[in-house]
Amino acid sequence: MLRSFYGARQHTLLAIVPERPEDSDADLSDNDDPIEDPEYHPTPAEVAGDSPFESLEEEEAPSTSSSTTQTPGKKSRKGKSSLKTVSLEETGDTSDPNSPSSPNKGTEIIWKHEHIEEFEVPVSRFEPPEAVQTPFQYFKRLFTDEMIKHIGHHTNLYSAQELGDPIKTSPEEIQDFLAILLFMGVFTFPSLEDYWHDESRFDVIADIMPKNRFQLLRRYIHFNDNQQWNQSPDRFYKIRPLFDMLREQCLLIPSTYKHSVDEVMVAYKGTRAGSLRQYMANKPDKWGFKMFCRASSSGIIHDLLMYQGASTFFNVALSEQEQTLLLGAKVVTTLCKTIAQPRLSVVFCDNYFTSFNLVRDSWLVYKRDCGLLNEKPLCLKRFRLAVAHSLIQVNMRYDNMGHWPLHSDKRGRCNLCPKGVSRWKCQKCKVFLCLSANRECFAAYHQK
Image (cartoon, rainbow, N blue to C red):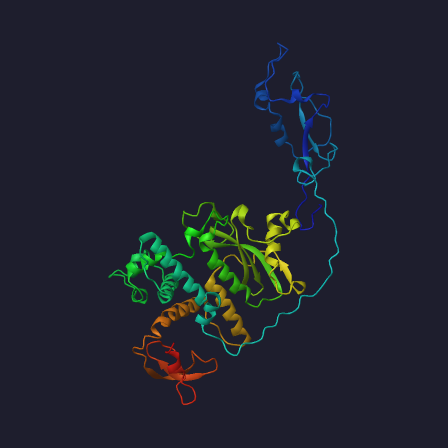
């Protein structure tokens, strides 16, 4: 028995043809033609087995012979021809129906061979840092103070345009707002009001900000001036400044020589985004905004491009030849332009990553530094909580109230100087700080 490469049994292609080739195709129609011999009357057995396909199911094996035995006493009817099963090779048609070169499959694809110089991708080596920084510091590498000030400014501007008077938020309050969002991502409640309700109050969130103030910020938070739109082709105009600042920070992260370009989803379950809200069945977040990203082999995203249909490349400088490329080739070309050393790099197009998360990207940079110094990293959830607590502590850090040094039995790394180790801990901020004659990090930490 012949078997294919993977051991599967090869299938013989069969064809149903007329027993007498001289019969026309019209004679093989399923319509019941009138019997011209008035003396002919079909027997009950003939009526039950009149279909030629029923006789095929009763055969033990397909016969390739053209001779058949006619039932004695049975008269043939004009217009009803018998069918037989033969191998497809006997019909003279040896074409594969699934082949792309088949006439009904479109034009034939012609491949050409092109020599590509072989090269070995260099091993990526990173300079170990002096010490592993805090999760908050890694988060600030991507989400900078400039971005927080930008959000506060445009939130006040938009609220003044809508209400006639700004809600007077500040960068410190925006950080509190972000901290609440991070806590809500870890501790999920059925509804937003449950975090402040008396019967289900969650002190970690409720003590940061009143519910009405949080909902007010949530209502008017903005990232760009709506009145400066001027019919821009950018469908992401409202978040474009913040996105560009985030992209600049991602480009500053050192990458390996192995890159992957793929489409990712930013989860969004709302209904006000129109056609910008995409659906991808093979992603963990099936509904959301689609982005094209370039990530390194460590999983860190280094460049991003938001998909918005025909205007996706409205702000990308492409040559005339690049503009004629299809979408996939154009995306890869655009994202590969920002590779620092393209001649030493290799780019893959595969599902190496499926979603973009700002905190997760910060955590991957932190995890890589921990590996260089042989230190055990925090898990992603603990890293997220540490960032959220730090966002709140930035506000209480300079309030000059209740910051007392407490001596601890265990030592901890100083939160201000990278090499310091101390047993003194701030009672309110709950961070270790150097407190000695040579290093007075405790006092410097609480002063702007």
